[in-house]
Image 1: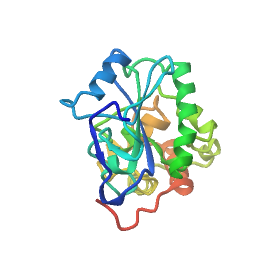
Image 2: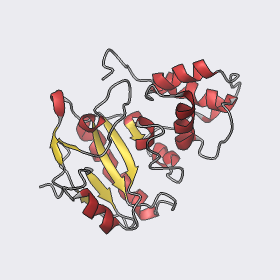
Image 3: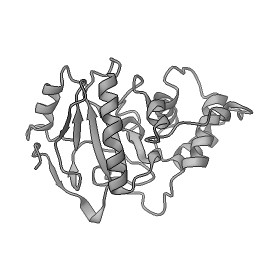
Length: 227
């Protein structure tokens, strides 16, 4: 039974093929839960995980929660109909608590198994909405998830023989990986936010090596669906 009224049926026969991770950007988990269950807010998520590792199921997985908003991944929109949304209680500037990460790592395998979702389809809100969203932000430990087989990380060896920076090549690879068709600077910022959060300045060879590796190993089949 759902605790949040903010959901509906998944549209056009779509089913979960992504997991989108968020932070709540609120002072407490209780405040976040109130917001996610407030019909006036018109936002929700399938799960909310507190700093202490308490997991609250707010919307049934087979239903369409309202967590992603405008954006796309892999050339397809309506991410709400195509995803499971997980909110992590975090202000956006604090580290993610160990018990919270433990709970996330316990929750994800069941979701991925039930819906046959691959680790590369566990993405950030900022990945599908570059420039509009920045969560779960630079403090989130994506490498930790990747080591558990619950997400992905660039091959450390990809830095060897890194190609010279080339904007169009970076853009093409970023779209091949799954990023939306947005401005070049937003693509670079989104990639760095997840994989190089301390990087600054213009596109460089390390950025090129990372995006080439991600596109080659985890590129999506964009097909003909660009809605």
